[in-house]
Length: 300
Image (cartoon, rainbow, N blue to C red; front, side):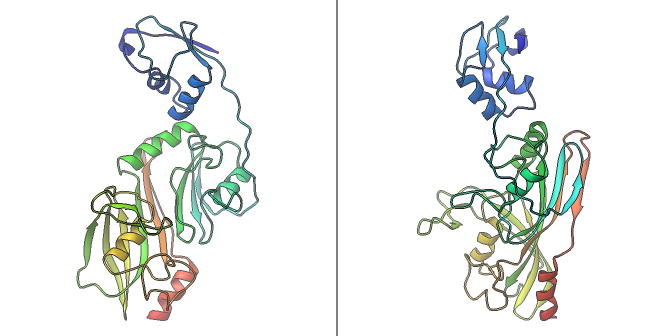
């Protein structure tokens, strides 16, 4: 239990915002839930999250309940590139779904993380322990995982302001005359297929993908793609939009599966971010997986 007396600097601040500053290791969504559930009182009264604080208000924060996890822990091997008290950097394999969703509650990265550690952030709920961002099932590569709520929120803010850097290699159909370029095209849900995303110039959310040519082959090009935003399926949608779909992509593109049929040849090879505690910039890079290299070798 904590008793906090509100000083003048916090006058008119929302109750949930105030507690997110005081309780930096608890997400704001969790704080709002606990306020609604009566674990937080103001002057011994239950108030809403939107309550505006007054000077000398006394905020009583009772011990929050420890949640019982419903996520099944599974012994799925993890390739851990880096680990400390706050973060994990993982090289996710192709074929592994990042977290449970409709129709799949097991055999995901989240299940593997649950087995590996019970001490991961709870910001995104029980079924996404520590998961700050995601990769599509058949997109392999680097992910950063938060081991506490403070680290999660810190990394999540970098996602929002586009300072968490992600670079991908993509083998695409067709050839490019230019060496580099930028795709600026808003993305929204495909109106004819709810499983897909699409460029939507009217209602889509802003999306920007930078690319540069890394290698040229007969009828194919290897690109490095650098995300400025992180929309669902962004690289896949953008490259299909400019008529250069990712090779092997089962959802986007036409004529791009004759060379490879086991999912898109898209690999998150590089990630960079500011560390939550040290505030130092960290960068990680991993080589192309064997299956990707094998396809490139066949084209040389």
